[in-house]
Length: 293
Image 1 (cartoon, rainbow, N blue to C red):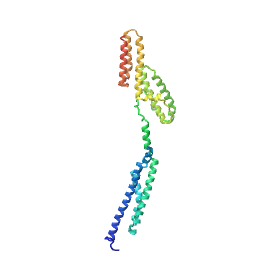
Image 2 (image 1 turned 90 degrees about the vertical axis):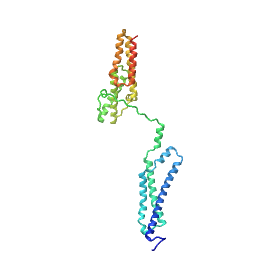
Image 3 (image 1 turned 60 degrees about the vertical axis):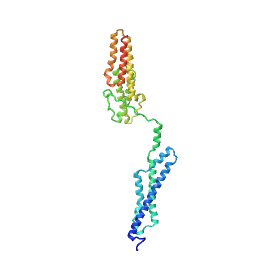
């Protein structure tokens, strides 16, 4: 064949192969730039937050992009094996680029549709988060295990259905007592028993039992509510002892009852907060002041 344009056949093929590869790479870069331009153009369009979210859902992951490129290169790579017999030409380059671009963009389109269907709508979640206040988790009260009553009874669906009504009845009875009692011992032990029954009702729910615990019961597991309930028993008991002291004649008898008030709470001081202890001290001081009258 002789030399062509200053190259022998071997160097000519190497020169044209390198040039061909550069053209293919340039074509691939053009395809990516085109895809990027489409994405930027869509991002600049004035859309609602929902529309923006729908568009963002279609973005390809790195793995999906790699798969699309890999599938797009299959046919061009197979075409390179025909170079020794067919040779390079403008038509060959165009066909090579077409064989890459067609499967590549088809896979991109498939992945975009798949992502649109399978991915959650982030913008809508953000809107719900902005428009609806987040529910703040309240700290839960942990009762004394010795006062909770027997636990661990719910171990099957049958037991859950049998025990749930009993637990509900016990919780309601306890709540009623807690609203009126003036005995600290009754209050603290019964409060934890009530919470224990509510916890057992939660176990019943896990077995599919329909338990409609009202808000009036659920609040007993809230730490803030318990703090208020403790202060109420302190004041309610104070009123009881105050009436008794005011009915007595001698100062010694009055002082004995003022002392009994504080003594009634002493076994449960470790189950009271510092604020509750302060309230107890103030109420106790007020009762002692009555003994001086």
